[in-house]
Image (cartoon, rainbow, N blue to C red):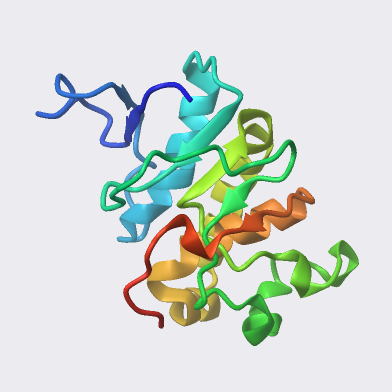
Length: 184
């Protein structure tokens, strides 16, 4: 594994930029996130993948509140990325909503992994395909009032899960990837 890079979607450097490797990207245009700042995450990855020089084959997506207590091995195997199994991501419990973004002809809802985008270890080439779809699906979900209300703060997680399935990417689920204090 290479080093860590923080992707900052404020559009400008901050006080931590000199403390750790940081790639600054633009936020979504004003108002596009509708007050849900997390929608900037998929857009940030789209920009990073397009503009940065990334030598590694695999990317670890993690969030600032993830704490690693042991060295992290590459849990991905070839074209099978690894992800944490979120018990509260249940596509089949929201079939009517999910089918707006994942049509029946794409396959069964079981093709949609119960995951978010973090923590995930994935091939850079897979993420390059998924990221624009993740961004677009997340924006469409946010613009659908019923989906927005039902998914709330985990909407972007569903966006990543659906985008991955739309590209035929299945993740190997790892419950030991992190500790989840509580479930919804």
